[in-house]
Image 1 (tube, helix red, strand yellow):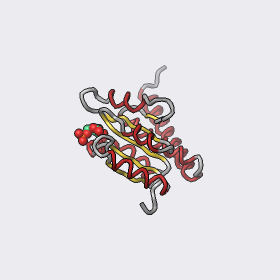
Image 2 (cartoon, helix red, strand yellow):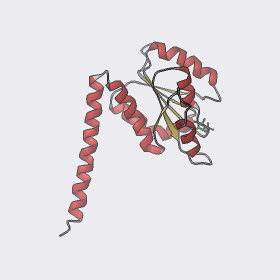
Image 3 (spheres, helix red, strand yellow):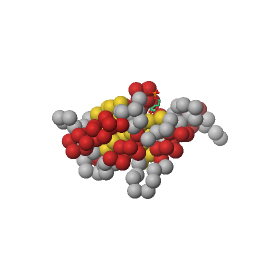
Image 4 (cartoon, helix red, strand yellow):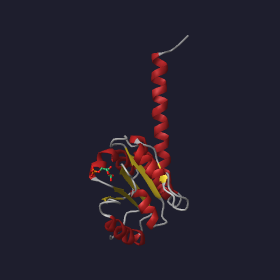
Length: 170
Ligand code: RP5
């Protein structure tokens, strides 16, 4: 792909997309170009290999891979490349995401996947983690991540002030 984005968000199904709003929102706020794909480790394994064979040499730096159920997408990405892979286990199915969490996090030694937690916080953290990886070599991204962290802290301080005003104590 011409002008390969540095981060890719790949998901196993378009049914995962509504659960990845935080990932998309954070990377947009940080002004980091993003490639978004639906590729399944199980349903379209050939496309996964083909995509990685092109995107990594073209300049892809970090993969965020989201999948539910028997979630092998992040591990399959990690099997094919040595760039960092962040796994998002998707909540859903009969086991409410526990299957995806264990499938994503419990990789064999030698093929790491940096796995975030379940739910919207995990989706948010995956984006921040990917940005922080890029931020090691990109001062602009590191600055924007630090500003986002500071804004989050300000929001907590505002909530603290509100609660203290409502419950002033003695
Ligand atoms: C996984 O199976 C996908 O990542 C998704 O979370 C789950 C269900 O996929 P669909 O049947 O909704 O396409 O591979």
